Image 1 (cartoon, rainbow, N blue to C red):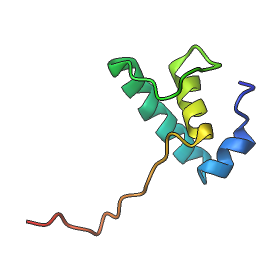
Image 2 (image 1 turned 120 degrees about the vertical axis):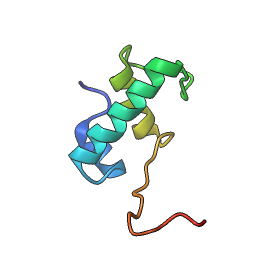
Image 3 (image 1 turned 135 degrees about the vertical axis):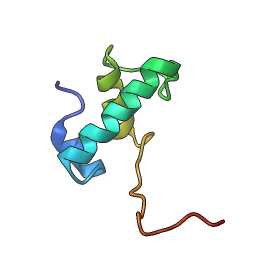
Image 4 (image 1 turned 135 degrees about the horizontal axis):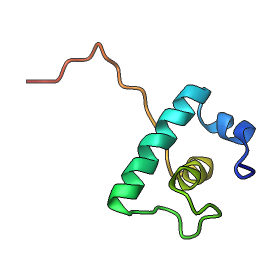
Length: 72
């Protein structure tokens, strides 16, 4: 994988584990639903497309606080 580089992706997401997790979830969602957020991709594979979305800032993630309880 040449584009985007791991170093540039780690500027967007703080750890390799989180990067892989977010990219895998997005790749699965993209393959099932077929929705694409960018007008043009370099990669032809879903994981590469997900990484491109992360690099462009189109795809972000947030850490859910497990201590929060849903309001009833």
